[in-house]
Image 1 (cartoon, rainbow, N blue to C red):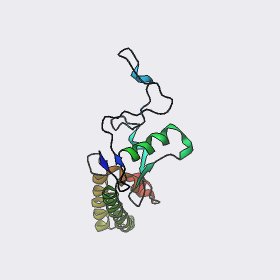
Image 2 (cartoon, one colour):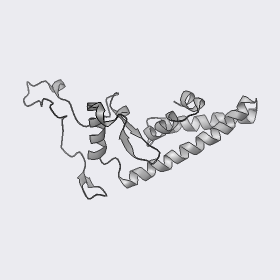
Image 3 (cartoon, rainbow, N blue to C red):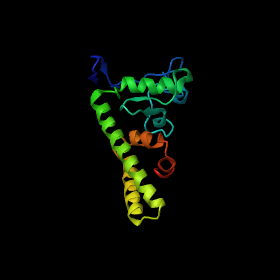
Image 4 (cartoon, helix red, strand yellow):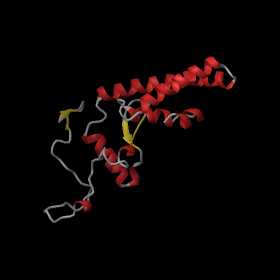
Length: 162
């Protein structure tokens, strides 16, 4: 638990909020699969992609407000876990800018590579390697790097970077 810049205490603590209207398992015989957790579970492959990142470093829902549970869950997770704390946002923004610079360098190298330059090919390969390192799940803020690369207008970035 910690206070955000708006002086509101945030954090999961021991809370287990459910989506509005969800059944709550209240006894050992209750089926917990009937519960619909409000917070995203990072261990479920379908949950982390519900959060997206934008170029100013902020986390947001990948879905718009009218899209029900996916939007509600992502928005609540961002708010409750304070994923837009100024310190975290600044780090994401730095990474986004680094990714943007890599795209620019990579595009120049790709142009050289297309024109059969061995130097361009080697530079392009090194940049792709660095981009893939930034998007590995073990890398800090890897989802931010993925958001930047997958949002690129350049075909080679969207198709080559993992």
